Length: 426
Ligand SMILES: *Cc1c(COP(=O)(O)O)cnc(C)c1O
Image 1 (cartoon, rainbow, N blue to C red):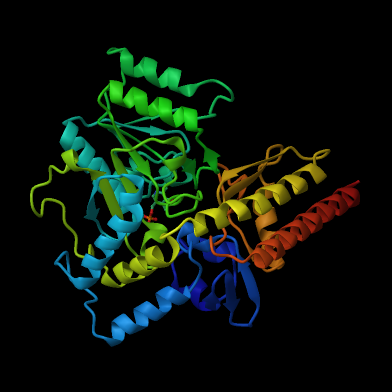
Image 2 (image 1 turned 30 degrees about the vertical axis):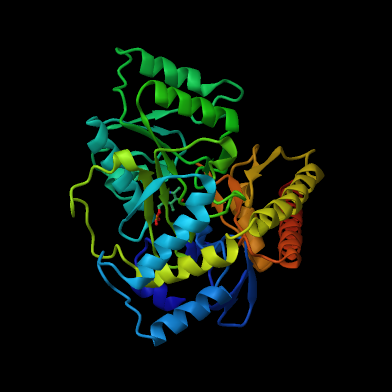
């Protein structure tokens, strides 16, 4: 580890939570240089929905490279891109009756978010964007302005104007937070400028696995229609099947004006994609550009994941099946400790959070103890108070259960150690 400590910037993040050197990975297993195997319940923060080195992806990439397929092509037409667009249209958009234009942005999520904000402002001729408490949309300047997370906001001494925050679903407990939003929009003198768009995640991935309800999303859509505001759904983390269905908003029956996709859309490779309704396509040719908008390897990887996982409902059904296992087990663990800890379990699909309400430091400690049990799970939430579960969607039932066993062992050991420490102090 010394080489990282000596030569890599202090900005290092996940390496500190999981301090070992990983060498290989397959499916839901990561292997380090000492041949220790870890079960991966983090999956690259939702980038590896189809697992590490997915067989279909691996094979397709090797064949493509060996055939001298185009690797870099700016945004020129290539066979790989043509085939991706056709497959995305046939397997994802058409069956859902979604008519979207596609825009390829630079290959990271924040590129897609920046593009979405720019397009919304351009089309509506308004500068304000409404974002929601605890939302996370990336860390470049425009995306940061609509990101709530204080840890990231604190470090950035830049102008973060043209964004207004409104309370997300559940922010005030049972209160309907959209009443508040509506009032501010209705009242021309509320001080909140009519926004070009709202931007939100249906399940806040970094913000603590806060889940918006179907009713809330539907009401938000109707308010936005009434006041001519665009809806941008940031599906970067919880799209691509994470919620069970391909898009996280499908269950609510809403149709966002703009959708951002990244993380798992490239089958594990860098890729970002913007979807928007055709009437919003008001770009001039080349008006929004970028060198790496055509990661052809990602087009190939993405196409084979669509072909192999999205031609039928098998993956969706598997996610719901595994969700039951995950949810029931987490709830059982929460119940086991209910006398000492108030634990809330929430999520959708294979995105779950385990929040210890009465001690915000515990989630981080659980994650550390889990690592000692060879389980990778990260924390999220404004104070890192939520343990987050994002296993690959393709994880086997056995490994999922084995990972949950390790999680339970980690908690047992942590709470035992805590008791021991307490008794030593008195
Ligand atoms: C990860 C993430 C982003 C930013 O993606 P990067 O590739 O890290 O720039 C934006 N929005 C959401 C919801 C994310 O989870």
